[in-house]
Length: 271
Image 1 (cartoon, rainbow, N blue to C red):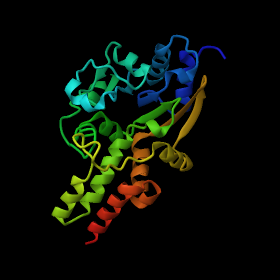
Image 2 (cartoon, rainbow, N blue to C red; image 1 turned 30 degrees about the vertical axis):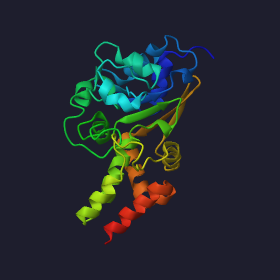
Image 3 (cartoon, rainbow, N blue to C red; image 1 turned 90 degrees about the vertical axis):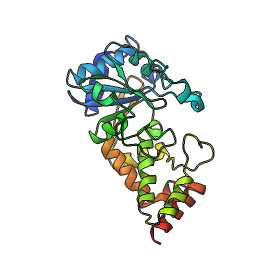
């Protein structure tokens, strides 16, 4: 098999249902493609040639190594550690990056500034990575609201960062049903926060298993490019499906202390 070209990248993303003017977040394993005609630039050129001037390409530029010191060591030029493609992309001309220590994104295109501007400005939510990582003002929530495309290139939905937004909404939904405020606060205090990351409880759900459920529901589009298996989901549609699944049958997704906490919250909502 010869080196993958930008035309093949463009064709594959078109097969996934992506059109000119769309906003696309890509999680990736660059090596999964096999050989690329011009390395990382081939992937970017191929996607952007499809999106055109009205589209926007987004990549996660997360800083997960040395996680405990993330906020102390954060700066806008801190390297992304979630794949070479993301690190390469953030250095390109006209790419903007959001200002957040653990879950920043980089974007280029029509909506780049709108997505990356004021990541931590408003609307905090429960989150073990800091209450503004997935805030209402975050790129993650903005992509959720606009139902952006999320593409997984050579990886499965284990790596769906959007899941953390839904985990927070799941916990908030359960707590919001409890009318007894002291009891609500008691349960909230048991949840994991950045300061109590090792001690707290958090409803992390299995991304790969949710990916299988989404696939079964017909919400995942597949194609191949080079040696890479590409999967696409719509941000809002897939996330709302995930939240419904967690709320309707939490026992299918959780066990142990997390499921005990969920059942306590459910019981408290009925008191």
